Image 1: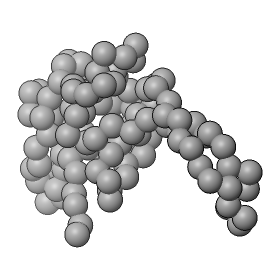
Image 2: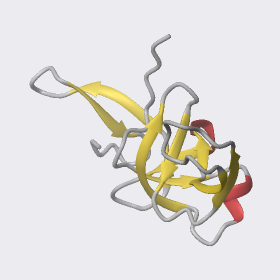
Image 3: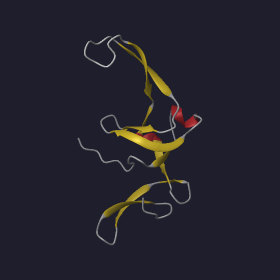
Length: 112
């Protein structure tokens, strides 16, 4: 199943729902997108998740134990920040003068 998201890597987003909404930093740049799980990794999101792993012979952690992973937010819980005004905005698509499909901020009309 191929999914296309309106939020891309490198966009500035703000967390609008979930546990990370009330954190110290709720705004940041998208570092990576996990398309299978529909989650985004945001720069500056200080929350870390501890994961217990079993010992594995050929993997990175042969001893096992507790490792810390970056916290991922579901893509429906983030919203794009308008590049001109700094407000939250929705994303739309339009064709530019060359016929290329581009994204634009619906609040200000600025292409992203």
